[in-house]
Image 1 (spheres, helix red, strand yellow):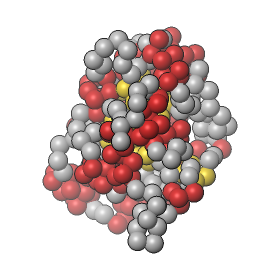
Image 2 (cartoon, helix red, strand yellow; image 1 turned 120 degrees about the vertical axis):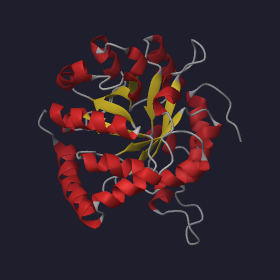
Image 3 (cartoon, helix red, strand yellow; image 1 turned 135 degrees about the horizontal axis):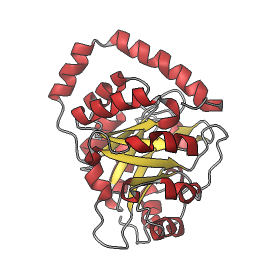
Length: 288
């Protein structure tokens, strides 16, 4: 595992304390019971890897209020929808706009301190739309996989720069047992080479590989980063390009090189109508 830099190091240090507090609040047997009662996971892998024609790209549309680099993405997102804030942030409304405008799946930020997310957003999203939902957080402990499935998540993000190979392998096995698709994200070449032999373990139909075009240390974004690492990816069919995708030209350029799944968040959430922004990204007229 490479040394973590900048804000990523701060996030992981805080996350360790957060997970310890969660474990103290909820017994494992209680969490196990919640998972047993949960509806089966929706098939996230199938939703994003099936393409009806040669011109199709799958967009994992992200629901996100805030980030350490951008702050509040829109001023109204600082407040949740309610009687005092009728124009506030409503994850279910955003999800419905995404669903109506061609999203293949949804990513939901659940980190509270740094991204103003909430694990409870997942349930609200799934009640609103039939799409599968990825929990996007900083997962460092198997406990969080159980927590994710109990909350209704269908997939989880794992960050290669934050985990050892042994930790990853344990989480891959547990995720598959829980029916969760794994999106394993990397940024550095060294991390990609380290995880490459394990992509698809223990079952390839539960595994996606993401390349984050954002340098988590320097917080710089370059969509061409995906293409620079592409030759080191054994199966581009499971590859997700994340961050920095802002136009249909970007989507088409990536597809031209064989990358047909993209995860887009800040660009969509910055728009007054995230659904219309998604339609434009896909090169289609927006649906009302």
